Length: 244
Image (cartoon, rainbow, N blue to C red):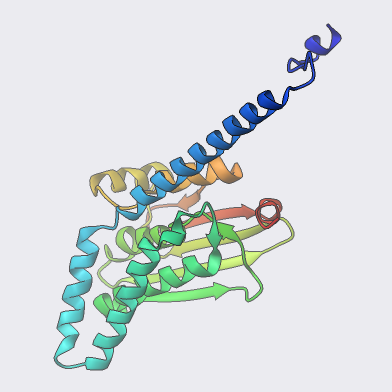
């Protein structure tokens, strides 16, 4: 009775029989497989959300260079291949992927966009050499894409997107910052803008995945004419658990 009052209500009233143990083990394994299948299905859906307009614009950009600048055309085709491979790679069905993979995908995306926008789009990387972490696939690149679409391309003279990765004793901090027009009520405004442009891996989805995995989601600071800053904190304790 004392045990029940304390909340311990999973008493074993008799020793397990072998068949009972096998049955429970099978049930647990089925539950584990079901959870893994659900994650894979969600990620497959996310991977299918690459925006058609990006591919259309990327191909138009490549065609525009094809006659006069074969080397740039070659480089852009390589980066488009890297982008597509990183987005559809079946390894992306993993629950967490290395930061370097997300950075490779992001760099490939940005090289294409820089060819398209020219001097209007400037990129700064501030990545600690020893900073590394595991994070959900398709996390960083969509945040950078939001910064380009909603922060930079809406300004006549363009602007700068800064991608920062810093590590301290407790967290790896990923920051995507732009010096665009900014917005009031950062998170809700950005989510509303996403809903106007259907498709793609949305900020809300990224936020919910991070909260589910790490207990902390996307942090946004923004103001009118003050740019937008998006921060993700990856707890190091969780990184260590996933590396066991």
